[in-house]
Length: 109
Image (cartoon, rainbow, N blue to C red; front, side, top):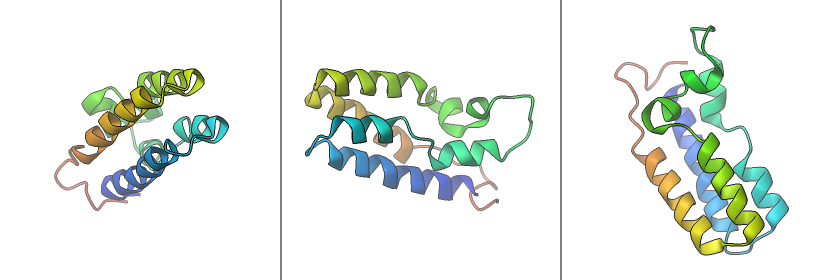
């Protein structure tokens, strides 16, 4: 999967999550926030195999990845702090929208 496709599919997922906050179902939100996304899959397909999947991920390389933010989001869901969750999701979406795809890698498989 190309990095561009992975980023675009991941954005679709996170925009769906953003919409779910308006009709919160805590279990569904926790499941989606912590799901493996297309960026995870794309990173898993790449060399070198001496790095973890996260270390190969462009999101990890450019803004620290998703582990810490997913934990924060999960905490907000449990607290039912929807305003703070919206802000975290919006910030994450912004990072994804500005993710830089390295030259020559946008269409690679």
